[in-house]
Length: 211
Image 1 (cartoon, helix red, strand yellow):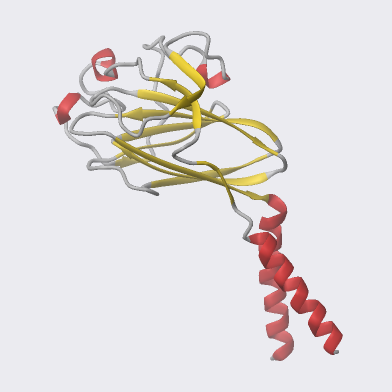
Image 2 (image 1 turned 90 degrees about the vertical axis):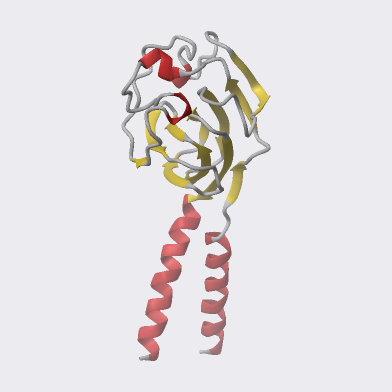
């Protein structure tokens, strides 16, 4: 019985160690493709745009989470960026430094490329002043806008991705005052996620046997 307890204890520790193996795959020092030539898209899309408010909060300073995918058809400077084609537009990269600040009232675009060796749960934590639109592998994933400055973990979203090369595509929006940016992306291998679930079940089973 003692050996069985030791085995269970060792299994719990192994599962816990595996389940907490989150790896940071993108942070503020990560490089990528960068496009600072979009200018102020509020001028392109005109007054009343849900996605690109007028400069210097002339059309308000909205706080919105869950923004729909923006229509980017009126700007050609992005090219076919959502399909990882950077041959058109003012792209630099793929090893460009990503600045935390940029021209006030302008929009900028960023693409990070990363490779996973196994299926993983991805969590994206971003702070941005003012707005953010995000795609993963060209699929629209998240949109939000807020007043005030940028702080770590201001927005968080995620998905599960298989092994291989992937792209995180971001459009940063600003409508006046200042700019700011912070990012951390973590990956947890799917077996670790399963292990965490199994750890919970194991704990429930032990508790029931004691009862």
